[in-house]
Length: 468
Ligand code: LM2
Ligand code: CA
Image (tube, rainbow, N blue to C red; front, side, top):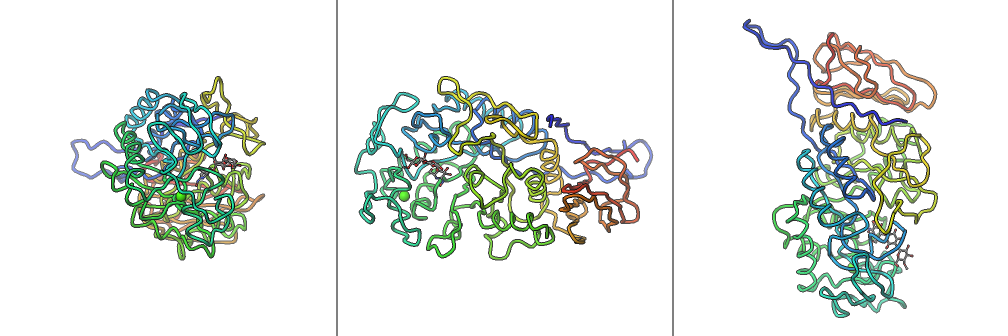
């Protein structure tokens, strides 16, 4: 599908002329950006392009990058997760390109969240990193030597074997990745030096990779050493019966809502959409939860909905943006048939992201944010944190307002469209469905009729009123 991303429709404001009457149409409040997007394996130039062309105009809040530090050589995507040094020279670009990207994103109003791989270094015996650093498994010149690593001695090969054993999870190796002694002040200092270098280039926040594999005190001590007050989002995958839970990391900042993502997948797949806005009990508190439909790891697994799920994935992405739990993070990566396959590279550098133009992209083509996802992110910014109201659930249909600022309706039926008459708090007037650009929707006396396509949605907000 061609990517036609129109600039956000802006409110039609009646000019206040000499007369005394107030404008008849409500003034849409300033958008409150909150939505993020993970741009998996986009190179820095492509992130900058996305900030300027799509994220800024649609009032996104932040972009989540892939790791920026030097890493091992190889064609696979996951070389990014085997650090070799903290130079900002990687397959995704140079330090200079990184700096320019942050500047462009900031100029577009978009914050930059870096992926901080700080639990470990490489998982191979040794070699030369992509910026030329020679290393061995436990020797990284200028940074770390053998004493800076855990050698847990709890399993035959020092690899984590049992996730119910906290000491193993935090001090043994995650698939042979040399596990830093993150309790040691010297190690904390070195890691913080790297994170502060990113902060000095304008980075606004960090995803803490493999946070579960570091004692929460260690993560807290490292975060303490970071300059300023960056956003911190820890990756702590909730696992039943495990001693380490996301709640243990909430004093440090926020967490990714893995439990939510799995439950949400079940709800959307099952078609009982009315359960989605209620999905909050037993989850981390909303203000500390970063929700997602998928990420780069779950995209390669079975526990969440994934881009290959087509319309179901799209419906889930739009619904995630509409509910009032958590801070939503959309996902964009490239198509693959081999789990390990990296984004297309030339001479060790990832090529600029090429957006697929078909629903069935060739391997290596990116599934870029589409017009609906962008418009729904703008919708979310317009409704801000206004609560869900006037909820109506009927079979596979779910509709609700967000305060008196927006309305969204979703239809999980795979073949039938649904027409429904809704009660809404939206001010009377004519509205555009920002997902289809149909501007003929009339709200009158607090009632509105909407027709929702199969596996589709309709979204109205006070920033997109028609001429009526
Ligand atoms: C993460 N979060 O906690 C990342 O989100 C995830 O993508 C990383 O795994 C992992 N933790 C380590 O940062 C990926 C990938 C693995 C890959 C590792 C390291 O999913 O497959 O492991 O990165 O590159 C690969 C090989 C594995 C090998 C390991 C060490 O697949 O077989 O283990 O490298 O050489 C012997
Ligand atoms: Ca560890």
